[in-house]
Amino acid sequence: MIYPHGLESLINLDYLFVNQKIELLEAFTGWETKNKYVIMNNKGEPVFYMAEDSGVCWRLCLGKYRACEFNIFDKNQQQVLRMVRPFRCDGCCCPCYLQVLEVYSGNILLGSVTQEWSFWRPKFYIRDASGQPVLMIKGPLIRFCIDVIFKVKSLDDEHRLGMIRKQWSGFAQEFFTVSDKFGINFPRDLDVKIKAVLLGACLLIDFMYFEQEA
Image (cartoon, rainbow, N blue to C red; front, side, top):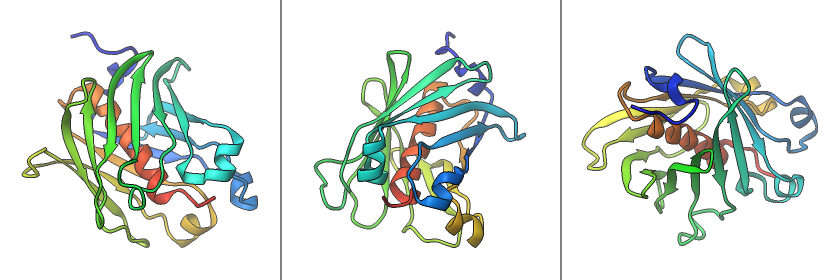
């Protein structure tokens, strides 16, 4: 089987740890900087490095709702993925204009994450390149001071296949820095393209529910 360039490292993985790098300028001044992440395997070894690409006006004026792209690089500094998030309003206020994030390898669409309208609990679909849903993500009522788990489920809602966990880091880390930590669990034999889209779902969830307001 031929895999998209750079995604071979995801073949035998069933877990990714996503660690947002702390930006001291943002922590001490409130100045919204570009997000950066390190993606590691379950041994703590770096797999990818990820950097946000967005305009300063988008970050300062629109905060977590900003349009942006994420460029993902391997350990050899070769770009392997590009994730595109257009500007969207809050889904509760504008259910016809919900959140979406598309995942590309070069110029080839691998799949997307789409928010589904829900008044109480977050809900998303993981879609393949043709736009067909393949997985569903259901979140809890968002609470703080605990780990927050978003369940990755089959489309019929019968089987839990994985999860995206926002890890509670303690009061000092959560309230005095801008660093978020996530764990992503999925079936080992899942298509690597869908694993990449789940990584995009983690980023979208981080922006929507855990990014500091502008």
